[in-house]
Length: 473
Ligand code: HEC
Ligand code: HEC
Ligand code: HEC
Ligand code: HEC
Image 1 (cartoon, rainbow, N blue to C red):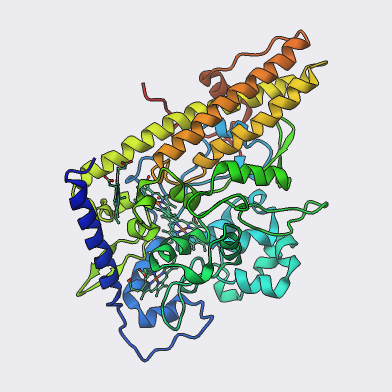
Image 2 (cartoon, rainbow, N blue to C red):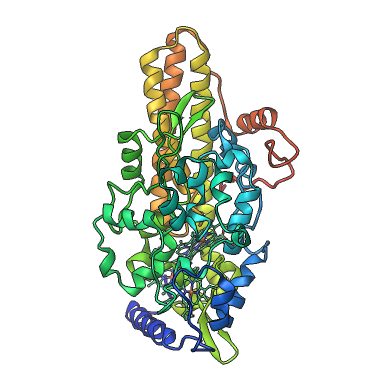
């Protein structure tokens, strides 16, 4: 697909790898005598030594719109794909869910989000505050089980809104990349990857994998959170698949919420960027490309070059990151991203409505007296599989770009399983001499408007938000 021979591409890539190494050899140390102490969480203190990085970091507070087709800061992420109201009916996800904002705002955004999204307690702070590791040390089991606000109050006053900061990814003494979260360290152990032998290029992805992954929150008998971990028990480096994650959710019965339409408890999937990106099918992972290559491209500030610390979509930097390796025009590269995303969105939409059809048919079967219990149980079992697969791609933040063939494979399975679940639920109704309702996309949209209508984001469907669920015709 590239304009030049693959031999040239490899040369180009090697060049870029050398460039990468060479570039970091000129870190911008303005005042070398400044010593940053171990544990220093205040980015302004780090900023005295690295003012250019600090300036770039502060830009994460800006909100950007209009560059990206599917990801715009702070927008409602439920209404554009209306079937999601049916899929998440029963918990916070269907009440408020927004497109991501910048890293500086993550704790602020969490404080502002609907309380139903923080029911899991202190656990929720794990990816939102640099104090998470020390709070876990200090509070032990209470860190996970105590209410969110109680654990949040333990953060020193001046940092109660501080989001991602330097210490989350860097060693203050050497400035090397360093992992700060137990979740990832335990995850690496689960997949048999030696934490002591990580390469620099692996670290350029793994610092992100501390948070941009799916996680599970096991609960005790009272429904209180007992831990947070990555469901990687069945994974391997370069292959943490949805199949393995589902198996673990089932084996350990980590079902965190109850779905109202089907009446069953379900697991959940959150933003598996690292897993999708590193799975088989990913051309970029196979070529040794890291998250930082595309999301932290080098930029010139005055006479020096730094890795951008404004983490955002590459589309917002006019594809500058891609140009480190690709020699096509930014317009062409952007078009490739959109072509991929439109195709993944097509399948996500198709599978999503089919999963919703299955949910609504199971709902009807639940209400049908004498519905065949065996067929209904089978329908519910397959429903869970379809639901988790559809969410694997929907919750992942690149709309499939990070690994297009894998995204389409998973959605294909979700579509097939949702169809099977619907057929089983119909059979359960038919065996009781009932008449299964027919649902097409338009009927589901009408039902969503009726059942989940609301004027603002916290009460339900917003007709004023443009629909992004779309099929390619
Ligand atoms: C400590 C957790 C954490 C780490 C580490 C982390 N992120 Fe994030 N990231 C988040 C959260 C949380 C959000 C959403 C913030 C919000 O909406 O308030 C986010 C948002 C983003 C966004 C969207 C920003 C926007 O303005 O739309 C990008 C892109 C991103 N992260 C990339 C990365 C990359 C690349 C790395 C590694 C170099 C990384 N992140 C490391 C937690 C993290
Ligand atoms: C080959 C380039 C490339 C690599 C490598 C890459 N990404 Fe992305 N990423 C993209 C593109 C392109 C998008 C889609 C942006 C859009 O739709 O505007 C994206 C989207 C995202 C988003 C959503 C951004 C937003 O504005 O909301 C996040 C978060 C993200 N990537 C994190 C990661 C993480 C974490 C890794 C590593 C595990 C990674 N990416 C690896 C290119 C890349
Ligand atoms: C999400 C993780 C993350 C956070 C948070 C973060 N950095 Fe970085 N930083 C990186 C990565 C990745 C690199 C590239 C390292 C490499 O290539 O070895 C980097 C590189 C650097 C470098 C080396 C020079 C360069 O530009 O490549 C400096 C200095 C630096 N960061 C300072 C900071 C400061 C100061 C802060 C806080 C204001 C900060 N970083 C926050 C991930 C992070
Ligand atoms: C560090 C180098 C590097 C960066 C940065 C990079 N790419 Fe690539 N890209 C590659 C390599 C290597 C291949 C595989 C080339 C081949 O085998 O033809 C590739 C392949 C692709 C393909 C074809 C995928 C396929 O399935 O065949 C597309 C599309 C693409 N890149 C888009 C992008 C976009 C868009 C960006 C920026 C967001 C980007 N790349 C950033 C190195 C890179």
